[in-house]
Length: 173
Image 1: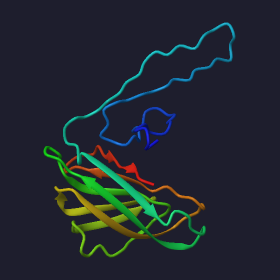
Image 2 (image 1 turned 90 degrees about the vertical axis):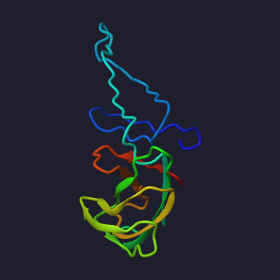
Image 3 (image 1 turned 180 degrees about the horizontal axis):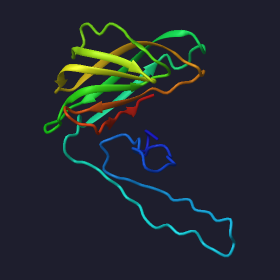
Image 4 (image 1 turned 90 degrees about the horizontal axis):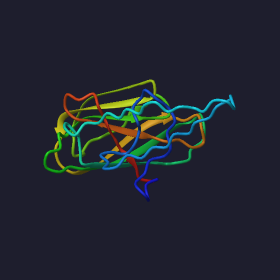
């Protein structure tokens, strides 16, 4: 929920938690049940891993347009990414967009970054930057993809140089 700073509920274990980052607080809820009325469920452990170094940017928000498109039709989308850089941020070396289908990157001429290479596979559009983005900027990323649902959600992830741990971009709808 972008108005309160809390992420949507997420029910799963053993994978990356997709909360907007960086964040100061972490809240969780455990829902337990049992099919045996003579036994109570037991919560044994919660493990949270986090990093405070190598963060790509202090904050980032993104939005895609158009939001509603005809299903099965190749459509040109625009993803607007606002990146806020502060002292100590590692910079953005790679941008990943989770897109509705394999995508073609549009023209990025005149942007604050130069894309050294890009690829699209299994619904992930990856942009590798020629030089890491080291200052606050707004990037307009055009791409063409086909959606198989009337509504779609494009998520973005920012990687610092040499990092495999992404900064999840907050949705700005």
